[in-house]
Image (cartoon, rainbow, N blue to C red):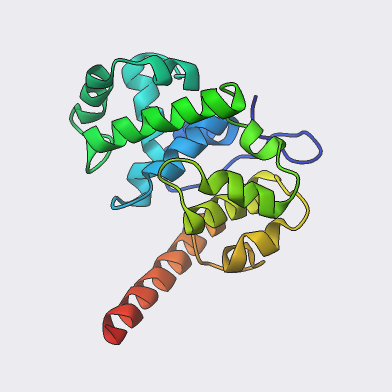
Length: 200
């Protein structure tokens, strides 16, 4: 099941990755969740291109059911092939498998059900926060990305996404649609990091 806006028409992300990677993230809920999970301690270009690179290495797009049953050592090997799919390929391969298992167990292997089954924005963020490698902030960013760029907008989604849901903001990947917004998000993160360092 692909990701579509409320009118049912497809919407496409414009993140700083190759076109095929954006296309995959835009239509594959599982790929999008994998990318969000991988988006830590690596450049966002790396995180959001890795689901596409994983599909290339496997020769097809993996389903949650497939990754859930994948041999753990073999999957770690796929993640570790150079260039590795993450800074910590073995740990992230295990986390990707845990994500897949939770999607199979709780959502019948349908990643889109994480949001299509949400009764409100608050419920959506809670569902996302329970996924491996997510937590509160990442859940809010994911909800903001879904709402702002992919038209997934349960009632109260902006409020549930916190400041990441603010219209016109440049706080996270949810706000990246072109080179200018990418630069704005990077500037915000740089300033925030500098402020935290000064405070510390």
